[in-house]
Length: 69
Image 1 (cartoon, rainbow, N blue to C red):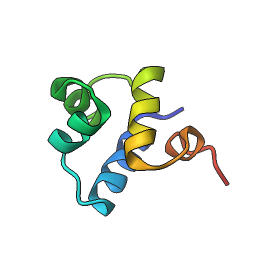
Image 2: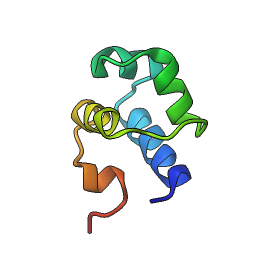
Image 3: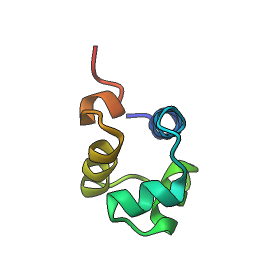
Image 4: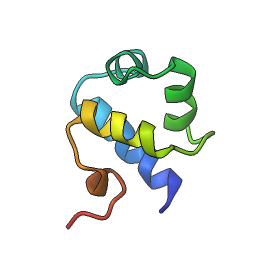
């Protein structure tokens, strides 16, 4: 699992949904700082955060991790 690829997919999905980090953090019920660090590649994403990102971005974990075909 490549963190840079995951960060890129999160950014791409945010852009497609016209969503910034503040909105993502609020909708995912996560601290803004956590979202900021994950999106900018300064922190790994944990399973519970991954689930929250997927719910808000409307994708499966496999899609976000780049495992979906």
